[in-house]
Length: 68
Ligand code: SF4
Image (tube, rainbow, N blue to C red; front, side):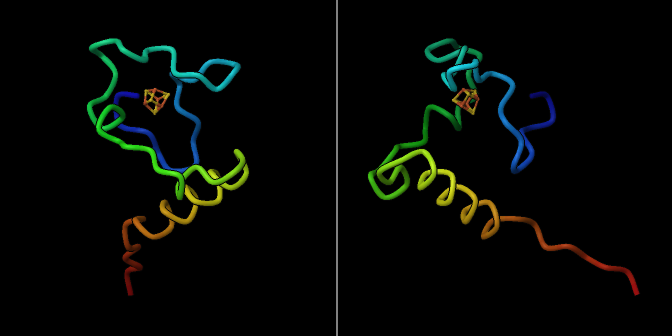
């Protein structure tokens, strides 16, 4: 994704089985390869993992400046 992946948007590199289509390819973003999974982020199910990543996205979202 040329401008980066917005929060809450599925990566265009995921196939129908939610597997990375460019895993192991040199074009795979460096940040993807640097992420080290841990039991705490994966939980026991996809739903738990999605909750964890949603909380992370909220915690790291840029502040919104509302003009007065
Ligand atoms: S590993 Fe990176 S490129 Fe591959 S599907 Fe996930 S976010 Fe997309």
